[in-house]
Length: 153
Image (cartoon, rainbow, N blue to C red):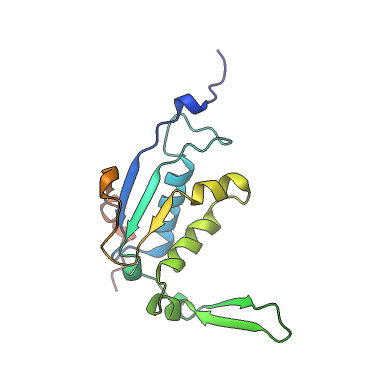
């Protein structure tokens, strides 16, 4: 018996719709990362892009537990003395709240060209509107998977 290795002809991609309202950020990001890589499939092959296309709505309403809203995120402008910072709460309340979820998923994928390709299959929207109705996505209820997925405080 030989080990199964998927080929491009074996890959079957689906469209998944996830509502992030009230779901804990880290748990949601790990589920999305697993779906993007394709690890939920029995035919998972590590070097192939086997994952599904994931659409996330209500990213601005994702829950963050503990004091993580006050955690600082740093970046450098490239100029001397150009270190800047913003808290996670400021990013969520600002113009682009979907960046918090996008970065959380990106950091849960292994680094390299394949994970950068898999990140192109993730679409995150801050509100309830998305322009992907034509793909007929299946709804994945992350809240119902585990009672720990929602914050109770």
